[in-house]
Image (cartoon, rainbow, N blue to C red; front, side, top):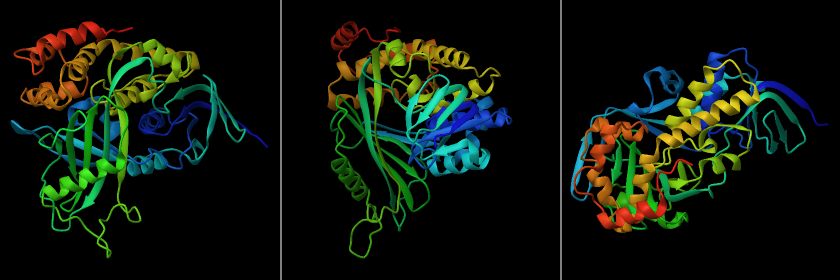
Length: 403
């Protein structure tokens, strides 16, 4: 028989945004009756999230510090004409840690995992088995809504953890290695050294197409490892340790790189009067597609509240998302130049020039908090794309519009 469950706040979607929100609310409002709902059996899915130390304000670090699995004091970038070590902290979170911390911090009744959602309203969540959750307020954090109202290119990737018994030799992350052959747009390889013998390698493309050929990109990871001289662990049959019995981590994804569009149409596509968080709210960096910094800010902002009524939650999350969209027209303009003015195999020149700039500017860029001086510096000097094409691209797209 179907049951009715009543609570104060129901969070739909136990990914990064939903998990951080649940942790922040549980910490700041220990008597609040929460429900965290997801079709998956675990919190966070199967992901690695990384962030720069400057992405998270000091006042908000309490939210993510228990989740950090790996940390480094610096990171490297490499381009055909420029390589550099940047002395800024960099961190990674594994989804298994997020799952463990959420389970430890929330009571058992709060976790409604392995439950498929059939319908969501501002105050109710109906599950596929007929159970119904009635809440003072519902927050939808299930991932992207309809991306149709947004003009976007794509950042797509395949990442795989490798075991190199003789050692991979990396002392710190390689956030961008763009010395690789440029294919399917701007291509770079990203490496996270988890231990002297474990390294996560991700092959990434800033592409005009959202299609992802997993097998082809996975083979390029093998080729990259071989080019570095890494002898990857093999089983008795001579096959690499992945994917036989799937002993190591692998993930893939396609993220929007937003050039413009109608924010309000995007918001309505996820539920007109429904409070939202994460990708569902449009709270992700237009250039990188990453949502962790915004997810932390959202969790902190909601945790500071005392009114969790549905209308108040909607208004608060909409105001935050709208203000963020309006503040980020500069990044959408740069994305337009990258995708519309630069030839696909020449896009690396844009990032190559960017990574010659002040590390503090770079940090503010990734945090989505560039100053007016930063913006002027990024645009100063000879542009790495043809000026005429850049002007035509900007005029033709209306990039940066804050509709």
